[in-house]
Image (cartoon, rainbow, N blue to C red; front, top):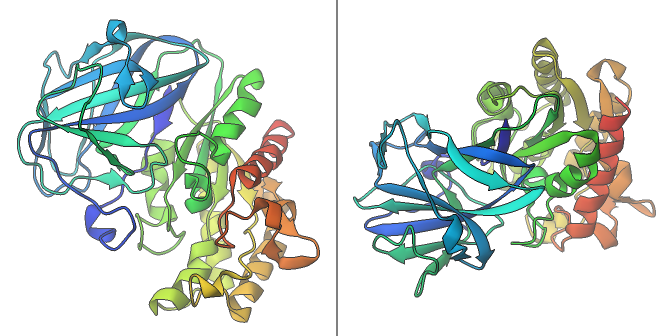
Length: 378
């Protein structure tokens, strides 16, 4: 079953973001991933979905994290692909490792170390990992410590971890934009709403994977493929089968056109896009939870063009439609959960990360509470 996912993004789309893309040459990349659920086997997924050349991983190791970039030596384990320690991933493809004997518990922090001997060019990545990664010169994949390593804030070419688990559990796909991705929460702390949701749903034998992409839109390719285009790849194709979908998309469709001089999106187009995803999810047997769009009042000083009266009116209309459309399934009314009752166009200050759009740790916790209630009552 899918235990971790990092939704892939093209480096060509993200050149101006805070966390730029990059390539590697004779370097070891150590990336930290938290997985949940007891298991004795795992497998690693490597993506070259947006590469313009084959990507060769010379060596891959998995180990339990101790702290920072340090690993527990006794747990260092080789990862193989079709029996080989190296793998070449064709441009546009993803590969899955052989099953690796490795024990995980309720919450386990893994260090996935990949040595890339040759020059890779820009690689497929996920800009906002919210988990520090480490890059060291040479082949240090099995080194318990990485002296002199420099830190990176994005995730590169690592697209997933699967765990073998007993039958009977469910899988929740958190599908959305930066609110789902966790922007605004504390890095290296696993306080995204999906992390906090996973802890709430664990007693119900439900796992959660985060499929958010910061800047993602429902209807238009800007940052990552649009939601209606990537849904089958990122959600439907998850091994083990998704039982619940949490859909949190649409705010960037409203706000970004004013930021970048793009064509405006109508409320009718947004509601049609949400409906299309819900219908596709249901055809695959998923229970759907649709989130209302969260407030962004006060963001004009930080992101000009996002916070306008016209955009606020669209947000209100979409939210009214979500609340009035029972055929969507369950509703997570995030607007009312994190909005300021005294100023309904704004986030409650206690939940505001500071940019008036994204939620802090407390806000993410509130979202997890509301989404968990919607899932458990569905």
